[in-house]
Amino acid sequence: MFIPASTIKRRYIVKGRFYRVNYKNQNIIPCRSVLEILAREYEQLQSLEPDAFIVMENPGRSESLEISEGHMDGPLYLSTDTDLARHIQNTILTKAKPDRTQYQIMRLMNAYNWNHVRVINLSDIRTTNSNNMIELYAQLNDDHLSIFSSVRELERINICQGILNKPIITAWGTSDGLRELAILAMSKLPDHIKGLPGDKPYKFLHPLPRKYGEPRKWLERFINEVKF
Image (cartoon, rainbow, N blue to C red):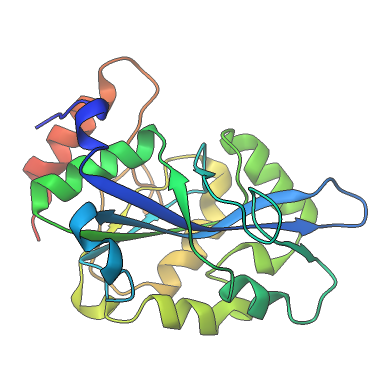
């Protein structure tokens, strides 16, 4: 069940929409809007509806492997651009380097016989530190940085086609600071979301607990408890 990363990563490819946003009083913020994980033989079928959707907290260590508009982190958009939502939606997919969390998703794909999973996030801000993301999201106060905001509704509708009839896994973690974003996401998602619950209705256990041995336990528990 717990396939080593060195083995599982050979079965799948990863593509994402990487971009950056330039804020006047901030450094340039690296972001990623959507991630596609596909079995290698399905690489050319990425335009089809995925077998399942997974909603995570925010992009972590995932990195683009291709230059897009002159930069590995994708095109640079101005936060003041009135067409920012459209630019984000039209950002091209590039091949990406998977991280440990995505290996967990690949293991789920293997267990459920899924060939294509689409990952979206509560926030697009790319950082490995949850607290930093929460603080930065609040500081920037820009709805464009969440696909669940009203300014990106058209994009969300487009990428979530078929979601009413597909499995939806919620696994964004249990930080109290995610409450507002998590409740917003749940208001936009269908009712049939499934995840390993935390101690509050808006909390769902993350697939990659930091404690040694816990990722394996999360995977085994999820597969045993969650049926589609």
